[in-house]
Image (cartoon, rainbow, N blue to C red; front, side, top):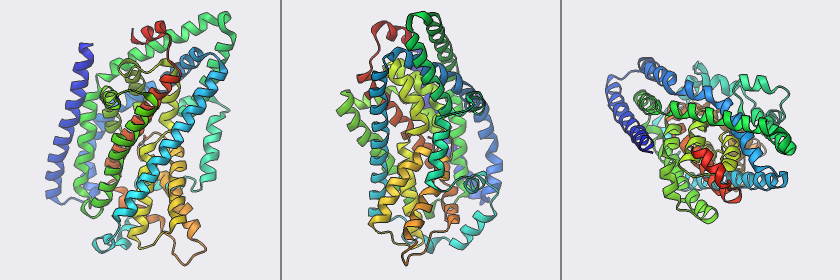
Length: 449
Ligand code: ASP
């Protein structure tokens, strides 16, 4: 237990030190007036080191952990009708909280109009030009990705019904592996006593993978330090001031959702002190902030939820892996704010119908976003296209896709914040579902042991 405390303190120190060093570098590079490319090249080593030290080891564990934790979670639920109840409650929770987040985002951005006056501060033609010429990977991904909701959902369905689970595992796609693991766990549960050795084998495997996660956790403080300082240092080359109000709105929205909405939901349905639970989950939240990826954070989320957050194996084995790819409250909020902000910058007024389209499609597009860095930026394009389609019959012009160039540069920092809220939303879900599906006493001891 003392080791846990030390580790948690070190992770926190890593975060604070990362912010301070990043800020000093930001000031330093800001004064050199480097362009964003030059600056990015100078600080790239910070990212490379953070990637080697933290992101890659965590990613290495995602698939083994998803497979074993889901199988163990499902076999311990046993009864398929119980699984139905847990599954439907989980999905209702995911969608309801994401929609709440998107509506909050829409409300804030409409009330505070951060897009007003931006076109006087920045040259939008230049922004579009820069976007068109940029060789950044986000632009390539945006242009290579489907832009309509139908294709994105079809893609999700294909992942949910995989034809080759091994190739999905090789490509670190959690969703197909989750489907396979749920079915496999159900089969083990159905066969019961006759396959007891196999069930015990997977439990032992799960504990071994969790032990590996425990070791990798000790890399978190230094990894978080490197990644956080990298992000903040890079802001030195960006026109932060022009989009400062927009960043503030996203940030305030995430804070309200994370510190107010989700805690109230947890208080109502989980009947526990939400802030104490949040404090216990801090290793996962800080890792999410540093790595910028719900999927990479998943090993830490599961371990922290079970060992420190006292979530049941049944709940966390199901809710957390699925949540890391589907449940993205922070992303839904961000997409809603970002899209309306861009329309405001271009002086295109959105009526009630278009705003409602934003809230709904932002929720659905967030489901389609993978738990990796910048995924929300890519699926945001779907929301823009949906609004453009709504406006098609009216006198309003459409928003050019290249407008996204305005918020490229500051996306990473917002992504870190929204990923933290995404992971917090998953953890709250696991805690609520723990009430419906608690572990039997001896199972809890195994998880803690
Ligand atoms: N980075 C986010 C996550 O992993 C997804 C996003 O880009 O919004 O949860």
